[in-house]
Length: 150
Image (cartoon, one colour):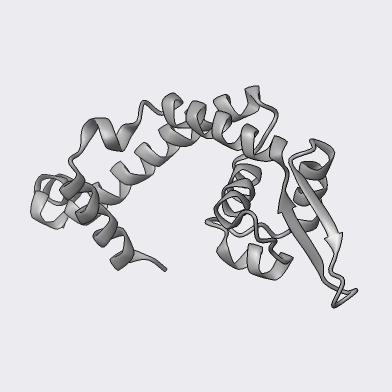
């Protein structure tokens, strides 16, 4: 099969087209999101950690549980947490029952920052999903993404 035949036969190309469209869209979202997050001096991984801690608030989390819940696992959670502690968004306290375990909590400042940054991040990508697809389409898209999850 030559390239003209291959590229003219759309029925054989839908998987590749979907893949490349997904890559293009995710890249566009990532660029816009990074630009917004940079203006707050925070990374997507740090926002992800804040998200998990805010969801779990007021209960503390340990590092293993937190790492397991992250959307994109951070290979160096310790340094990521160090940066959030320096910003005043997170506190780490030695667990009174197990001195080897750290209790990680979001601070009031961290909660406030999370909601402000999350709102700005969502706005920066123009609420892609809420604006452009219905709730039913979003559910279907979620279903399909779960099917191809590695």
